[in-house]
Length: 588
Ligand SMILES: [Zn+2]
Image (cartoon, rainbow, N blue to C red; front, side):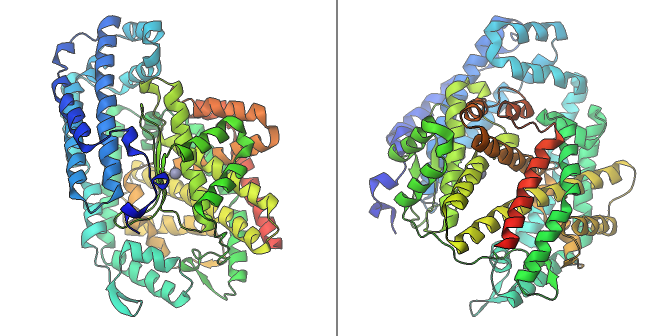
């Protein structure tokens, strides 16, 4: 379908941002004269000076984000159109200049004495900035002298070299072999690998798996060196900034208590027998004598598609999310009726789905809706992000509005869990029930168990290096194999290929990032349960979280909704949900 043939009510209303490219050009041109921040240098030591600076910076950022939003969305309507690529590039270069022009502020603030900062934090005129200022104050213990900071500021680029080399290898120079696909010999790619490994053809899965890993094996020493380089980078900053470990440094930056990480790894680790049971059941259902890691991906239940039109799907989402109350439901309808959503797949449109919520604008959602059951969940998921953005943008000042990665997948997953439970309660269709249970089990397997396995790998690899042990292909592969055995159990063959899976995970170059997926889904399961069990009071508490943006640390925000990640019990309840679904699936 071509975009021009799509009915208006299925297209997002981009004119809510700018009416035309001409209006955009005008707005962009008007930013230019406002980038002068030099006059604020040296004035951040009084409440009035600081407030004036914050307001000016904020107003310019909000307006820049608005031109960014339009360029970004226009680009995604048809990625072949180069005009909007240029728009994005212009905005990005303006952002870089804005960053440079305001770079003086953080060092100027960290140089202030504690008493001055304390005075700022408790001053009602600076209330909007209290959390941000308290983080700046906390950072002070890890800030070095001005001269040392100037040197450190120049280490960013050379220090990212390990990650850059990995990216270059993984995206360009990795020698992936050819494979026969749809009657043609084609070069294997990450995208094609993902298609084949999820496919029903077992021989193809095996072939793709073996060819894929053979490419990484050829450069495995190089990959061990790049990964070690990345760990050494973490160790360098950890040491010079005076943290007791790389993990502590990462948690400090997120303002997350160590016990959250430890609870995750401990409780999930103790419940790996449930995962072993699921894997053994998978083996039985697939009728395999020997199961390999490439047998873990295809869905166990085929084609349980609801085949709903978009209107029907949306009505179903409204019903499934009814436990969130009338206000939430009204927002869902508003998003649909006021055209926050771009529904149809059209030529040139960006694939996949996302929600974008920029302060000062209503949220927007990009879909490529197909009549699959999965896509009904996608509507619930993306609208979860959108309504989180809506509440946070409405209830917080700009500086506290943008929710952080740690909590970013919570609202979307709460919606998925609620919809799933609604469907499980209302459908008699045996095949659909099985599909839904399998959907949930695989969601927990990939988002909770797998990401915890990754988290444990990162923690142990860093600890080895911090203890003086150089990392190489042998000790990294031995560690990975041991963890793979721990998480998946004896029903699957842990071959030499899976032992080097660590070598191909791009997220490992953003250390201690993936655990946030695992804590996010844990909190979401806990919140959805509470909403179903307690109704209105739980919904009220959940709205406090949705309205919280980034007004305080993420763990406290989740506590508002009743998900306390500092308690093992929260992780235990997510594990129980998995076990219950597994039991039902075993019987189904
Ligand atoms: Zn999401």
